[in-house]
Length: 192
Image (tube, rainbow, N blue to C red; front, side, top):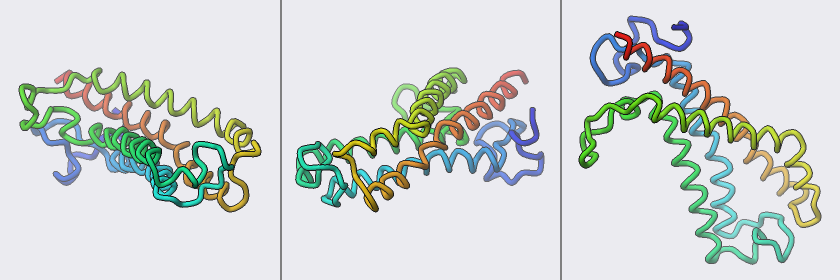
């Protein structure tokens, strides 16, 4: 395995997955990448929540995101989307934690069972591919085309929205990196 994807033998216990001694450790860069992946969703989630609670979004009157719709029933949609997205982002942490390799004991009927490697790797890589495709398409002109529409925010509100959504560009690549490291680490454990 690449030295950048596994930790050195003397790595402190807090940087190792909980499990039998001798299992490969999670390297610090991979652990940081997992945390960064989860954090890339925070700015856009905070922007959506702020809009849901009545912050002017800059969208034109008559559009679903116009400030006259908030707070209101539509607020639950924005807050729910933010919570759902952050939960998906936090799942990335399972790729570097023991609960991503073995279900916690408190999980009814399945607690303590080992998670099949591909059960985590396949959805994570598919998610990374989809998120990367969407964000790259947005970065290559899709975002600007939407922001050029007359009903879209302009000026400082457009800049704020763009700055809040820009970190999503890193989510897919970071998730892919952490997933590959998880696969390589778990594959190495299984071969022993």
